[in-house]
Image: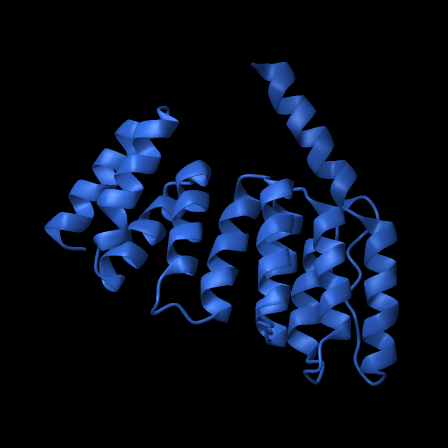
Length: 196
């Protein structure tokens, strides 16, 4: 990131609570950043989980003349939103992605679904899983295995995905964890908190 990018990032963070000044700064300075700087600032804010600023820069990037819809751009936004449990923003980004006809490959779908599951957003994860199933890409077993592992705390949802997996890959075996694996971790957490 260049010096201009660093200055812009610092100023954006400083102005994020002042919407009028923030919008003015975005219009006068951020929109003049080079492509690499703008994308770098967005990536840095994603790393820092600065959801509000990421959404602002997301809109700026999408308005740029050089912008082309990109699977990785959307994946990174969705993963950051999953980490921060931002369902409304996720829906907005997903709508934009659909309008721009961006297609994810099976591995990216698997990573996204797992990201939402790991961040305790099973409904969003299953919505993405539905999109994955409707994808024109040929199903692959690895993304299903990644999703199944993430679904261990959600046995009902796991059974549905497991049935789909066995239907698509009839010769494969699915590892089923012991029934009490989730209960054991809950008991350990309670025991640890009792000791404190």
